[in-house]
Image (tube, rainbow, N blue to C red; front, side):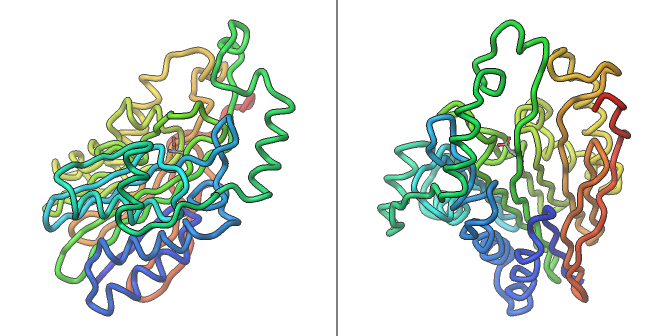
Length: 310
Ligand code: ASP
């Protein structure tokens, strides 16, 4: 039975990807077609066109793809002006000998492949950025001494989408505008193979959304896949990584009084047998699943209840 899973903002992506898989289209083309819908949606403010900009009001996108059958990957970081970064990441995989292109080089590469350079900042995103800018100081990345102690949380969001077809072929993609109002040039986990996405055709696929710095530090998606390789079911494999993230988070500004993280991370995983799971540190997340019969949002599992001061 084919399966497509995605983050909670990906219900249209899972429908589109499953439709493509049923037409016999490759799993990578299928998931990229799925997330393209979300990248082009101006109302999704955490992915692609209309995403939250960096601290200068410029939208910078991160994305990656990984193709299980050929064990290849491609990625773009801090890409400006292009609406469908996942497709550019796919072209990096298909049309270069590299894995990752960033910044101006990624844009030049996209333009060489016929992508139009466009302004990705919508009025809604510009207004959100201006509001943030006008109430600045404890909400930026340039941490003063006091802010280090206090900590803060900003809007996050991303789409991850992974698919398995009837032949047992797996692929995945993760695409995002990244942390809202980030320092220009900041690259999160989403375009980093092993962090925001990892696919091994013999084992499974995993992806992540949430605080990218914690996902990079834990090599999160890679470890989820390795856990599945060593026999864990997708849910257990994810909880193990979430536990490690919690254990390794020691910076006080990132912790509630109880010692739990102030941020959330969510992982998505499918194994080779079509078993899948999604779990986050804290409850409340939903994820999208097309199981070959129906396309629906499901509740994600979780590791911890948010503490009272959270
Ligand atoms: N993981 C993304 C990043 O850190 C953001 C998110 O998923 O909310 O760039």
